[in-house]
Image (cartoon, rainbow, N blue to C red; front, side, top):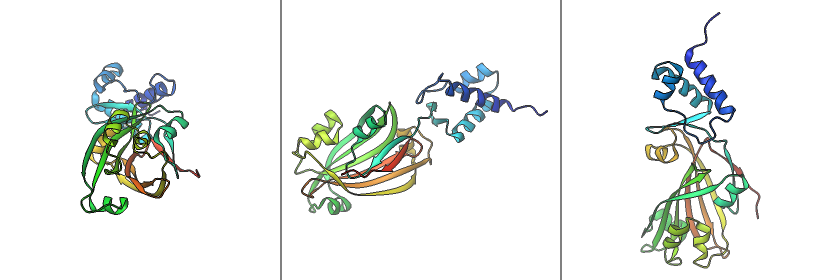
Length: 237
């Protein structure tokens, strides 16, 4: 009878330990050196075992950081009212946002067209990382017309919440005018932020939000990690 390759045995052991709860979703696995010592093999054999777990979707690796247990994909409704914190809590996850930058600058041509701005109008650009249970699931960039919302940068820096920040400018409700979804591959920078491999599948969502009067107030672009989010179409009103 042919012997089971050692790397397969290691992969099976790790899979069993993950299934039994020894490692929870988002947990970092021991280093290659630690596992090589544990199983009495070289690091190449451990790397082979981890590669098979990555292919199976059980773990994901981040260059320079190690291997992590994969999360169950989070259901994320895309509809008339898209609210990050509300969506994550409804899915039983703990939402969080990490603010990467908030800047004020001149609007580019696409932003001027979408937000109905003039050639000299400025915008607030908000870039950040969305997390579920402390695991990054998406990178985002939101652009707002600067003139109606002079206090928005400070509000975003304090809360990270678009809904709360818009309320400081008198917008108590807003809805999605349109959404476009496009399949992409992760760039080096996106992969580092999302803790996925360069070239891994991501889903880009572009959308425009309007206030109750129909005025465009937010042009957004979000890059979702393909294996961590299941986008669903919501029939909200």
